[in-house]
Length: 86
Image 1 (cartoon, one colour):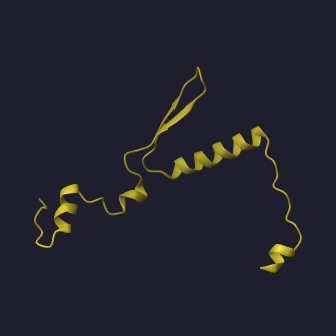
Image 2 (tube, one colour):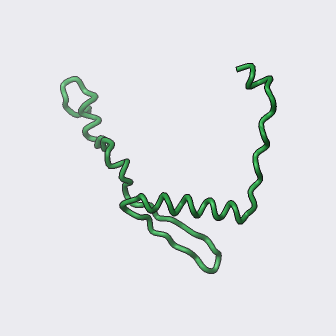
């Protein structure tokens, strides 16, 4: 721990140019989308240059998790007799 605090200062972070940042981000985004079974909808507005993504309703890793309980199920689970609270 003390070596980290009192040791030699680390190298300063390299400042990326706009081209390097753009190339890195597009490469990472392309690699991510290539692994997705359900692709997002990509829209490019040529007038503004704005790129928007419409994600699918559910991602693959979210499909493996349990669904949220319905509001009525949550109410009946909270009461000791299992009936809805008045």
